[in-house]
Image (cartoon, rainbow, N blue to C red):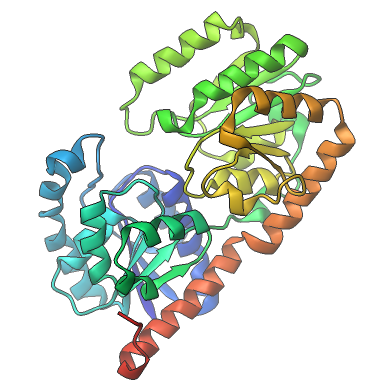
Length: 385
């Protein structure tokens, strides 16, 4: 069985990290994976993992792209390249890692079944509805995404949706050393360190993290705070300037650390005492699972993917509406109760090992690939439409 994985983004966002880990692991399930991605960090990492990788042109939906149809115009050029790759590889299934990737694959005129992997809660509704009609299967990366798709898609399509929750490789976090991680990133050895890891885009709500940090600092002036993330596509310079000004006004500059040159959470997470994740409508929240694997207690907004990842006060803490003051109160309570923090960390670790590993995702995907091919060979087993 040969699967062609397709993505049109070259940078390493959460969706691309997931693709990288899955493509590198699926061979253990008897699946041969070939990838087609733009040249860049993702291309290089897939190649280093030993996969056969074909270059395609990058296409992504910018802030204004969907509204002005500029992304659609770019996509018109993509199918020709993808068609050439399909003719050379002759895959059994095409696995599109995003909506733009699916649109490119579905306009090649191929009869090969195309899977659309949905990792977002923010899609252009009309485009998504048309895409769903052509998808052989739709993979929802979380329960929140499944609920979103049920709301926007035709009921006749829903039988094609499968929930396969994202996973991470817990082995990356084994043997973590807090002292070494703090030394590596220039963080104090003996102070509480509270962090947030997210790309620098407004909906991640870094401003709420800074508000929480200010509230924590008033009672714990020894605490230090870390934001790890990059402006991945250089679109949010004004937002970053606003965050810097907010830190200055809150009097946090001396205890605040920006880390903008790391895309390896397993290196920085061991340095944290707590992870705060205030993003609302987070599709999944990969970093939450990564923190669990690193045995770092998590406090997250009670919204989107984290709701199904975290068992309230067993494997983490969910805060209604991601309210900054309430997140600060929960953080202060854990800082003053190390035993309780350790219990949450252990609960999170057990949770991620049982539910959210790359290996588990690969097993589910391999099973789904087999079922899809079997249904094509036996038309009597088709989905309800």
